Image (tube, rainbow, N blue to C red; front, side):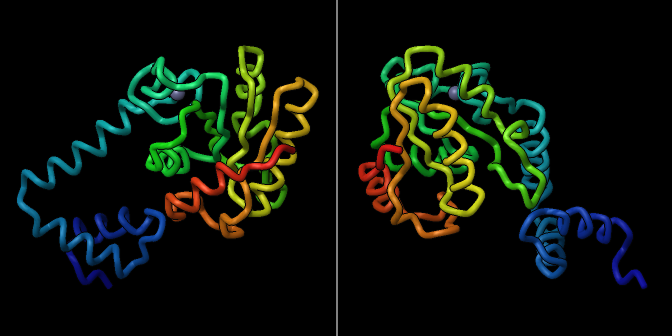
Length: 198
Ligand code: ZN
């Protein structure tokens, strides 16, 4: 039985497809949106459409950006000889928030997970290896400390070691299975400073 008009039901359905939004939250959000002023709704819808249309991957580090080269890769003030490998753009943002990391990044967009059928070819590893042909001194592996993150870290260190480039892993202290984005800046900095060579 359809309690709401089909338009509202459709909105609830679409919202409930978002991660972390259950059917109750989807209902609450739908009614909130309907009660919002028209121009606010248009701003929200417009921001979603234009983000989707204009966001692409940085040609160097593969983070999400609206330029060909992201502001970090494009900056002369950053140390381009130091590459921190992260799983996603949210993790990059977490490190950027500390304001203390001066190198550049490489965003894998995932981690190796045999359970989920995600292999080395499914994340941006080949692109990382291509970057290492440039002037790189150190690769800092900052994947999560989950099983997938550790598997990925081991895999990358095995790939990078033969090149003679220094490979390090951020120190533990980052909670096991913890998503980097939820960890506070002090812990992140400690993990970075205490990184160990692999
Ligand atoms: Zn970039």
